[in-house]
Image 1 (tube, rainbow, N blue to C red):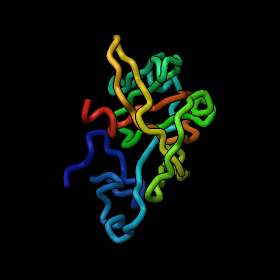
Image 2: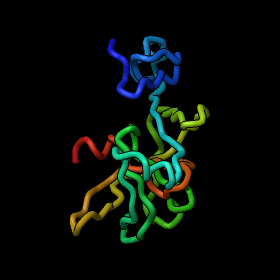
Image 3: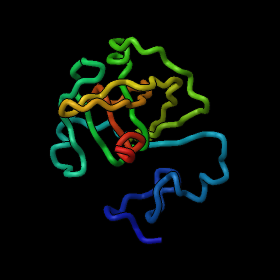
Image 4: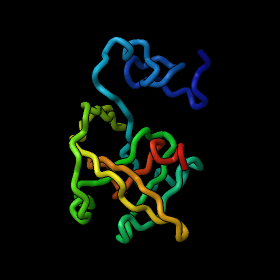
Length: 147
């Protein structure tokens, strides 16, 4: 396998050449969905051209947001989650999220169909409450891929 462009190592086995979701060690673990999220601050995003940040409305409430193609799912802070009237849905399976400092967390619920507005266009986004660092919302590949 070819090395990743920035020579990042797999979070599971620490070998360069694949990411954690493709790790041979992970294939034997079945039952738990896994993902990555990064506790990234606003200073770190300025230097990365693959990341977009800004203030955008979710359910008509403006919030600090990070769009990151390196994150598999979308997340919301517990503090901002309290401002939304959405009824949470319990996750069907355990989802383990590894954050950048090699710690992990497991969100337990999902808020479906939160309304994200960009340039007068509205989109549904599903988010999981979790402590995520400097931003209130992180939009990951689960939303970016189809949009």
